[in-house]
Length: 409
Image (cartoon, rainbow, N blue to C red):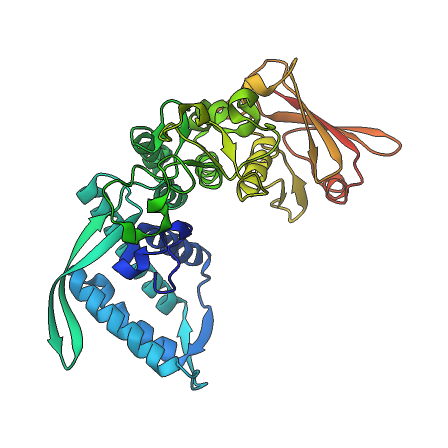
């Protein structure tokens, strides 16, 4: 917000000037800290600038502070002092830290994020992405405004907050929280019941014009309550990553462009649009129509979904013996198989065909790879089991295998 960039949603370009805040950074900070903690090796040592060490020491204790205003006051003072010291650079003096110091700090940050997330959900009963923070009480001392109290006002729901929530809140037992997130979105104004798609935000009628250009657009158009394909695909991708296959495929045909009716979409279903006019748009004849065709970010999300569905996230890994292992883990519904067969191209050149004789889904306990037939230049090779080991795994990685037929059961 201090950089005048309200996360992904740059159409809220006025929100930073309203002392705006966002839960998206909270989720991402938690995710990044947890990533480091999970991979932190005991005994590791590091050297960081002395100024950074002093900054961490200044805020580490107040991370346990339950008085949120006091925490904001102390942490921002530490931040401003740090910026003042490093405005023209750092001194060059290093300070040694170890794994315990790093872990202690990051775990406290994670716990602080968790408390904030829980408080927001408890107070507002939903994952509101953006907030306006109005100064309710202040003093003026020495020509400076000293804030005494804020009043926080959540903006209407934005799909972005739920996307970030799915990244970090999905790891609870059986993915219960992820499914709760899905239910919250489905029951909210973000879900367009007519199109059965997901809008980028809920109605902005109650917010001031100062939030940014999103407010000036007609509802259902551009960044105001339209189906913004980039963000909708981000949401779908996170459902897939979270292993919420039933939810993902229940929306699949309604959300993905290749399944739309060309007469409604009004353009080739082989190309994405920047946005689709939602049912909030006054012109009913435009509902479901795509606008501003371009190579939008939705293309990247589509490719990610395609990879996760067809081959799985990690097709190569090291086995217990340290040898390279190749394994396909498709997540495909039975209805995508034609006569028990589904084909795709792997690594840009290898034709892969799944044979699903029993017509099962390949997720949630359904059909899985049980054998592979590899086609090389001069021979065919049968490999029994769910994976392929060396030397053939390396041959697949090096594109020396031309074709693979995978039997599912």
